[in-house]
Length: 238
Image (cartoon, rainbow, N blue to C red; front, side, top):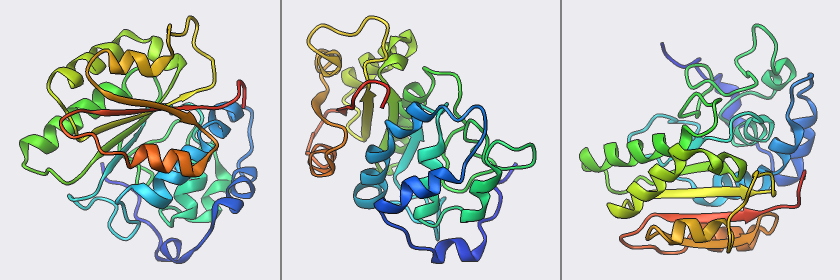
């Protein structure tokens, strides 16, 4: 299957951060998972606006950075940012979750330009990101970076901890994880979630998940020879 072609007009739209909540308001329905979406809004914006080397004009270019949304059960913020950056047209938002809409309650990589994985079941995105980074390394593509967004509750899944351990052991420095921590995990971690990554040899830091400058500084911090994790803390249920 191939992705739905992006209408030419989509790449000509221009929005800023202040427009994102208005774009999100166009998406209605009974399964919006609002808190899951709004907790990621600032992280997604800083990544797409200032960090990721991606282009709506060439969403599958081999030298692009790869962004994987593992926290895929609340994609409204993701769709709003993709709209703001020209990957999808604004009028798609009105059909969010409808039978014939490409914008499902979980993103579908075959339907939405710019989406790298079909996400849904928690615990898959980080292992897929490890595989993606290994694949880039095997192809000799050393410039693209792999970014994956996970939730703190998702880190309860054992598959994620195996991925963290492996990536640290092999020094997978093309891999970057953003963990949005809104205190929804069942048990939590002594010393904070960043300590779990650091224990496996990662570069890891914790920042305010609403502070754009702090997020950018953390995202752009050098981490030679090691994967990098940023824990973005937001208020519970935000």
